Length: 75
Image 1: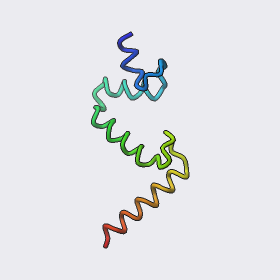
Image 2: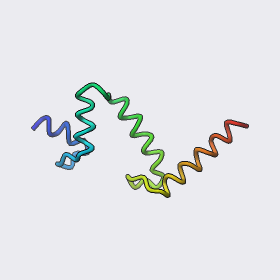
Image 3: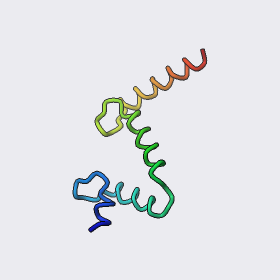
Image 4: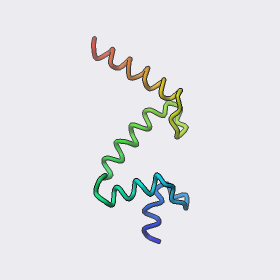
């Protein structure tokens, strides 16, 4: 039961495949919390509309933003 709660990362009472894979990789020492936090932050940036999913509109918005930032760096 304790392990179930550790695997149920979003606390919804179910272990989705992504939660299982992520937690197993962490237990195996392949990933740590810092790795996961960095990837989650990147996802949040790319999820432009905050829906919890990245769709083509989010991707276009992110790419346009990234391009503008690169142009600023070149100046």
